[in-house]
Amino acid sequence: MADDLGDEWWENKAAGAASSPGSVLHTQKAGDLAEPLTPQLASLRRRKGLTGLRCRMQRPKTREPSAQSRQVEAGASDGEGGGDTEMAQQDTAPGRALSRKIKPPKECFLIQPKETNEDTAKTRKRKKKKITDILAKSEPKPGTPEDLQQLMKDYYSSSRSVIELEELTLPDSCFLKANDLTHSLSSYLKEVCPKWVKLRKNHSEKKSVLMLIICGSAIRALELIRSMTAFKGDSKVMKLFAKHIKVQEQVKLLEKRVVHLGVGTPGRIKELIKQGGLHLNPLKFLIFDWNWRDQKLRRMMDIPEIRKEVFELLEMGILSLCKTESLKLGLF
Image (tube, rainbow, N blue to C red; front, side, top):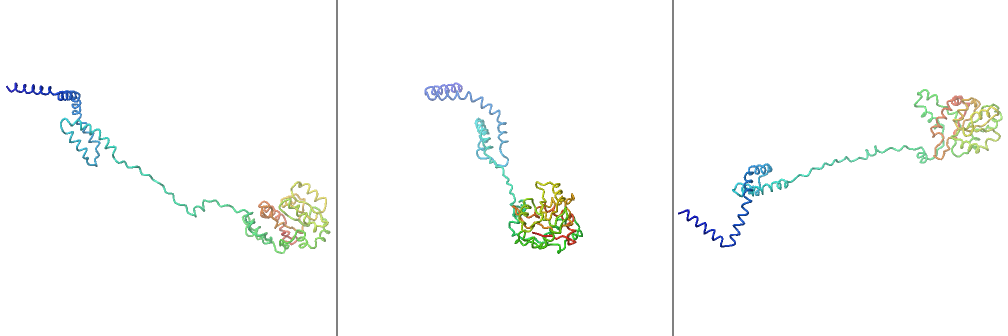
Protein backbone atom coordinates (compact mmCIF):
# COMPACT_ATOMS: atom_id res chain seq x y z
CA MET A 1 0.00 0.00 0.00
CA ALA A 2 2.78 2.35 0.91
CA ASP A 3 4.69 1.44 -2.19
CA ASP A 4 1.65 2.19 -4.33
CA LEU A 5 1.24 5.61 -2.64
CA GLY A 6 4.88 6.38 -3.20
CA ASP A 7 4.64 5.52 -6.86
CA GLU A 8 1.59 7.66 -7.30
CA TRP A 9 3.30 10.62 -5.55
CA TRP A 10 6.27 10.42 -7.83
CA GLU A 11 4.08 10.12 -10.90
CA ASN A 12 2.10 13.21 -9.85
CA LYS A 13 5.33 15.02 -9.20
CA ALA A 14 6.63 14.13 -12.63
CA ALA A 15 3.33 15.13 -14.24
CA GLY A 16 3.36 18.48 -12.46
CA ALA A 17 6.92 19.04 -13.54
CA ALA A 18 6.03 18.19 -17.14
CA SER A 19 3.17 20.66 -17.10
CA SER A 20 5.53 23.59 -16.49
CA PRO A 21 8.05 24.13 -19.35
CA GLY A 22 10.54 25.96 -17.12
CA SER A 23 10.85 23.05 -14.73
CA VAL A 24 11.45 20.57 -17.57
CA LEU A 25 14.28 22.76 -18.85
CA HIS A 26 15.73 23.05 -15.37
CA THR A 27 15.73 19.30 -14.74
CA GLN A 28 17.17 18.64 -18.17
CA LYS A 29 20.06 21.10 -17.59
CA ALA A 30 20.69 19.73 -14.12
CA GLY A 31 20.84 16.17 -15.49
CA ASP A 32 23.19 17.20 -18.28
CA LEU A 33 25.55 18.96 -15.84
CA ALA A 34 25.46 16.16 -13.26
CA GLU A 35 26.70 13.53 -15.71
CA PRO A 36 30.09 15.12 -16.52
CA LEU A 37 30.73 16.50 -12.98
CA THR A 38 30.24 13.22 -11.18
CA PRO A 39 33.47 11.50 -12.34
CA GLN A 40 35.45 14.76 -11.79
CA LEU A 41 34.21 15.06 -8.22
CA ALA A 42 35.04 11.43 -7.61
CA SER A 43 38.61 11.88 -8.83
CA LEU A 44 39.06 15.00 -6.71
CA ARG A 45 37.84 13.12 -3.62
CA ARG A 46 40.45 10.42 -4.28
CA ARG A 47 43.19 13.07 -4.52
CA LYS A 48 41.95 14.93 -1.48
CA GLY A 49 44.67 13.77 0.86
CA LEU A 50 47.52 14.61 -1.60
CA THR A 51 46.13 18.04 -2.45
CA GLY A 52 45.82 19.00 1.19
CA LEU A 53 49.44 17.85 1.79
CA ARG A 54 50.80 20.08 -0.94
CA CYS A 55 49.00 23.08 0.42
CA ARG A 56 50.35 22.45 3.87
CA MET A 57 53.94 22.18 2.55
CA GLN A 58 53.64 25.52 0.82
CA ARG A 59 52.28 27.29 3.89
CA PRO A 60 55.01 29.21 5.76
CA LYS A 61 55.81 27.97 9.23
CA THR A 62 56.33 31.31 10.89
CA ARG A 63 53.11 32.94 9.72
CA GLU A 64 49.65 32.10 10.99
CA PRO A 65 47.09 30.93 8.39
CA SER A 66 45.05 33.78 6.98
CA ALA A 67 41.27 33.96 7.07
CA GLN A 68 41.05 33.02 3.40
CA SER A 69 43.11 29.85 3.90
CA ARG A 70 41.03 28.84 6.97
CA GLN A 71 37.87 29.25 4.92
CA VAL A 72 39.31 27.09 2.12
CA GLU A 73 40.27 24.34 4.59
CA ALA A 74 36.82 24.43 6.21
CA GLY A 75 35.18 24.04 2.81
CA ALA A 76 37.49 21.13 1.95
CA SER A 77 36.34 19.24 5.06
CA ASP A 78 32.62 19.44 3.96
CA GLY A 79 30.94 16.84 1.70
CA GLU A 80 30.76 17.34 -2.02
CA GLY A 81 31.90 20.95 -2.03
CA GLY A 82 35.38 19.93 -0.82
CA GLY A 83 36.67 19.28 -4.32
CA ASP A 84 35.88 22.82 -5.56
CA THR A 85 37.45 24.45 -2.51
CA GLU A 86 40.56 22.31 -2.93
CA MET A 87 40.91 23.54 -6.49
CA ALA A 88 40.60 27.14 -5.27
CA GLN A 89 43.18 26.42 -2.56
CA GLN A 90 45.53 24.89 -5.12
CA ASP A 91 45.16 27.95 -7.36
CA THR A 92 45.70 30.45 -4.55
CA ALA A 93 48.68 28.68 -2.94
CA PRO A 94 51.25 29.83 -5.54
CA GLY A 95 49.83 33.35 -5.24
CA ARG A 96 50.61 33.40 -1.54
CA ALA A 97 54.11 32.17 -2.18
CA LEU A 98 54.68 34.92 -4.75
CA SER A 99 53.12 37.56 -2.53
CA ARG A 100 55.88 37.19 0.07
CA LYS A 101 58.06 40.20 0.46
CA ILE A 102 61.48 39.47 -1.02
CA LYS A 103 64.18 41.49 0.61
CA PRO A 104 66.39 43.16 -1.99
CA PRO A 105 70.11 42.35 -1.77
CA LYS A 106 72.15 44.82 0.16
CA GLU A 107 74.73 46.79 -1.80
CA CYS A 108 78.16 47.32 -0.32
CA PHE A 109 80.14 50.43 -1.10
CA LEU A 110 83.85 50.69 -0.31
CA ILE A 111 84.68 54.19 0.84
CA GLN A 112 88.22 55.14 -0.11
CA PRO A 113 90.14 57.18 2.43
CA LYS A 114 90.62 60.79 1.51
CA GLU A 115 94.09 61.70 0.36
CA THR A 116 95.81 64.19 2.55
CA ASN A 117 98.09 66.90 1.33
CA GLU A 118 101.11 64.94 2.51
CA ASP A 119 100.15 61.89 0.42
CA THR A 120 99.64 63.95 -2.72
CA ALA A 121 102.94 65.67 -2.16
CA LYS A 122 104.73 62.32 -1.95
CA THR A 123 103.10 60.90 -5.07
CA ARG A 124 103.97 63.91 -7.18
CA LYS A 125 107.26 63.65 -8.93
CA ARG A 126 109.65 66.26 -7.79
CA LYS A 127 110.96 68.23 -10.70
CA LYS A 128 114.69 68.60 -10.72
CA LYS A 129 115.82 72.16 -10.62
CA LYS A 130 117.71 73.03 -13.76
CA ILE A 131 120.80 75.18 -13.62
CA THR A 132 119.12 77.51 -16.10
CA ASP A 133 116.23 78.19 -13.70
CA ILE A 134 118.57 78.83 -10.79
CA LEU A 135 120.84 81.17 -12.72
CA ALA A 136 117.93 83.04 -14.30
CA LYS A 137 116.60 83.98 -10.87
CA SER A 138 119.97 84.82 -9.38
CA GLU A 139 121.89 87.96 -10.15
CA PRO A 140 125.25 87.55 -11.92
CA LYS A 141 128.10 87.56 -9.44
CA PRO A 142 131.80 87.77 -10.26
CA GLY A 143 133.81 84.65 -9.63
CA THR A 144 136.26 84.56 -6.73
CA PRO A 145 139.18 82.28 -5.83
CA GLU A 146 137.00 80.79 -3.08
CA ASP A 147 134.57 79.56 -5.76
CA LEU A 148 137.32 77.58 -7.47
CA GLN A 149 138.54 76.14 -4.18
CA GLN A 150 135.03 75.04 -3.21
CA LEU A 151 134.39 73.43 -6.59
CA MET A 152 137.57 71.40 -6.24
CA LYS A 153 136.56 70.17 -2.79
CA ASP A 154 133.08 69.19 -3.98
CA TYR A 155 134.48 67.39 -7.01
CA TYR A 156 137.11 65.35 -5.15
CA SER A 157 135.25 64.83 -1.84
CA SER A 158 133.84 61.43 -2.87
CA SER A 159 137.16 60.00 -4.10
CA ARG A 160 139.81 61.67 -1.92
CA SER A 161 140.63 61.47 1.75
CA VAL A 162 140.77 64.48 4.04
CA ILE A 163 144.55 64.72 3.77
CA GLU A 164 144.45 64.58 -0.03
CA LEU A 165 141.80 67.31 -0.10
CA GLU A 166 144.07 69.54 1.98
CA GLU A 167 146.87 69.03 -0.52
CA LEU A 168 144.59 70.41 -3.26
CA THR A 169 144.16 73.70 -1.41
CA LEU A 170 145.99 76.51 -3.21
CA PRO A 171 147.61 79.50 -1.53
CA ASP A 172 145.95 82.88 -1.99
CA SER A 173 149.17 84.32 -3.42
CA CYS A 174 148.82 82.27 -6.60
CA PHE A 175 145.57 83.99 -7.60
CA LEU A 176 145.34 87.14 -9.68
CA LYS A 177 142.75 89.83 -9.09
CA ALA A 178 139.32 88.56 -10.18
CA ASN A 179 137.17 90.37 -12.73
CA ASP A 180 134.43 92.51 -11.18
CA LEU A 181 132.29 92.34 -14.38
CA THR A 182 133.36 95.83 -15.43
CA HIS A 183 136.40 94.87 -17.53
CA SER A 184 136.80 93.72 -21.09
CA LEU A 185 139.35 91.00 -21.74
CA SER A 186 142.02 93.44 -22.93
CA SER A 187 141.55 95.81 -19.98
CA TYR A 188 141.57 92.91 -17.52
CA LEU A 189 144.78 91.42 -18.96
CA LYS A 190 146.50 94.82 -18.90
CA GLU A 191 145.61 95.15 -15.22
CA VAL A 192 146.83 91.72 -14.13
CA CYS A 193 149.84 91.59 -16.51
CA PRO A 194 151.39 95.05 -16.59
CA LYS A 195 154.82 93.69 -17.70
CA TRP A 196 153.49 91.68 -20.61
CA VAL A 197 155.58 93.40 -23.28
CA LYS A 198 158.84 92.61 -21.47
CA LEU A 199 157.84 88.97 -20.91
CA ARG A 200 156.88 88.58 -24.56
CA LYS A 201 160.22 89.81 -25.80
CA ASN A 202 162.18 87.47 -23.51
CA HIS A 203 160.19 84.38 -24.50
CA SER A 204 161.91 82.23 -27.16
CA GLU A 205 161.00 78.64 -26.28
CA LYS A 206 159.00 76.49 -28.67
CA LYS A 207 156.25 74.03 -27.71
CA SER A 208 155.20 76.41 -25.00
CA VAL A 209 153.17 79.56 -24.30
CA LEU A 210 153.37 82.34 -21.74
CA MET A 211 149.63 82.65 -21.20
CA LEU A 212 146.76 80.17 -21.56
CA ILE A 213 143.14 81.31 -21.72
CA ILE A 214 140.68 78.46 -21.16
CA CYS A 215 137.06 78.71 -22.33
CA GLY A 216 134.14 76.37 -22.92
CA SER A 217 133.82 76.19 -26.72
CA ALA A 218 135.58 76.95 -29.99
CA ILE A 219 133.14 79.77 -30.82
CA ARG A 220 133.85 81.42 -27.50
CA ALA A 221 137.61 81.07 -28.14
CA LEU A 222 137.30 82.99 -31.42
CA GLU A 223 135.34 85.74 -29.65
CA LEU A 224 138.05 86.06 -27.00
CA ILE A 225 140.81 86.28 -29.62
CA ARG A 226 138.99 89.12 -31.38
CA SER A 227 138.35 90.97 -28.10
CA MET A 228 142.01 90.92 -26.96
CA THR A 229 143.42 92.85 -29.93
CA ALA A 230 144.36 95.85 -27.81
CA PHE A 231 146.36 93.71 -25.41
CA LYS A 232 148.20 91.25 -27.63
CA GLY A 233 149.97 93.72 -29.92
CA ASP A 234 152.63 91.78 -31.82
CA SER A 235 152.15 88.60 -29.77
CA LYS A 236 151.65 85.30 -31.57
CA VAL A 237 148.27 83.78 -30.73
CA MET A 238 147.33 80.15 -31.42
CA LYS A 239 143.90 78.49 -31.45
CA LEU A 240 143.93 75.45 -29.19
CA PHE A 241 140.54 73.81 -29.76
CA ALA A 242 139.39 70.67 -31.57
CA LYS A 243 136.97 72.09 -34.15
CA HIS A 244 138.32 71.57 -37.71
CA ILE A 245 141.89 71.31 -36.39
CA LYS A 246 143.72 68.02 -35.82
CA VAL A 247 146.04 67.47 -32.88
CA GLN A 248 149.02 66.61 -35.06
CA GLU A 249 148.69 69.86 -36.99
CA GLN A 250 148.74 71.85 -33.77
CA VAL A 251 151.76 69.91 -32.52
CA LYS A 252 153.67 70.75 -35.73
CA LEU A 253 152.80 74.44 -35.46
CA LEU A 254 154.05 74.56 -31.86
CA GLU A 255 157.31 72.93 -32.93
CA LYS A 256 157.93 75.37 -35.79
CA ARG A 257 157.35 78.75 -34.17
CA VAL A 258 157.29 80.62 -30.90
CA VAL A 259 153.77 81.19 -29.50
CA HIS A 260 153.01 83.70 -26.74
CA LEU A 261 149.27 83.25 -26.24
CA GLY A 262 147.09 80.14 -26.46
CA VAL A 263 143.28 80.27 -26.39
CA GLY A 264 141.27 77.04 -26.39
CA THR A 265 139.25 74.37 -24.61
CA PRO A 266 140.53 72.24 -21.71
CA GLY A 267 140.07 68.96 -23.58
CA ARG A 268 142.37 69.88 -26.49
CA ILE A 269 144.97 71.52 -24.22
CA LYS A 270 145.05 68.38 -22.10
CA GLU A 271 145.57 66.23 -25.22
CA LEU A 272 148.46 68.41 -26.42
CA ILE A 273 150.17 68.05 -23.03
CA LYS A 274 149.78 64.25 -23.16
CA GLN A 275 151.34 64.03 -26.61
CA GLY A 276 154.26 66.27 -25.64
CA GLY A 277 153.33 69.07 -27.99
CA LEU A 278 152.90 71.61 -25.19
CA HIS A 279 155.18 72.14 -22.18
CA LEU A 280 153.90 73.82 -19.01
CA ASN A 281 157.16 74.96 -17.38
CA PRO A 282 157.43 78.33 -19.23
CA LEU A 283 153.74 79.05 -18.51
CA LYS A 284 153.24 82.21 -16.40
CA PHE A 285 149.48 82.94 -16.51
CA LEU A 286 146.39 80.73 -16.66
CA ILE A 287 143.12 82.64 -17.16
CA PHE A 288 139.66 81.02 -16.85
CA ASP A 289 136.72 82.47 -18.79
CA TRP A 290 134.74 82.14 -15.56
CA ASN A 291 131.88 84.65 -15.67
CA TRP A 292 130.67 84.31 -19.25
CA ARG A 293 127.30 82.58 -19.76
CA ASP A 294 125.97 80.79 -22.84
CA GLN A 295 122.39 80.84 -24.21
CA LYS A 296 121.26 78.56 -21.38
CA LEU A 297 122.83 80.90 -18.82
CA ARG A 298 125.47 78.32 -17.95
CA ARG A 299 129.01 79.25 -17.05
CA MET A 300 131.93 77.16 -18.14
CA MET A 301 132.23 75.41 -14.79
CA ASP A 302 128.49 74.70 -14.66
CA ILE A 303 128.82 72.14 -17.47
CA PRO A 304 129.86 68.75 -15.98
CA GLU A 305 131.97 67.62 -18.96
CA ILE A 306 134.02 70.82 -19.06
CA ARG A 307 134.37 70.91 -15.28
CA LYS A 308 135.79 67.40 -15.30
CA GLU A 309 138.35 68.26 -18.03
CA VAL A 310 139.40 71.43 -16.18
CA PHE A 311 140.18 69.53 -12.99
CA GLU A 312 142.05 66.84 -14.91
CA LEU A 313 144.09 69.55 -16.57
CA LEU A 314 144.92 71.12 -13.21
CA GLU A 315 146.28 67.81 -11.97
CA MET A 316 148.67 67.50 -14.93
CA GLY A 317 151.24 69.79 -13.31
CA ILE A 318 149.38 73.10 -13.01
CA LEU A 319 148.61 72.72 -9.29
CA SER A 320 152.26 72.02 -8.49
CA LEU A 321 153.31 75.12 -10.45
CA CYS A 322 150.76 77.19 -8.52
CA LYS A 323 152.12 76.03 -5.18
CA THR A 324 155.63 77.12 -6.20
CA GLU A 325 154.12 80.52 -7.17
CA SER A 326 155.66 80.36 -10.64
CA LEU A 327 152.17 80.30 -12.17
CA LYS A 328 149.30 82.69 -11.50
CA LEU A 329 145.58 81.89 -11.85
CA GLY A 330 143.02 84.46 -12.95
CA LEU A 331 139.19 84.42 -13.18
CA PHE A 332 137.88 86.65 -15.95
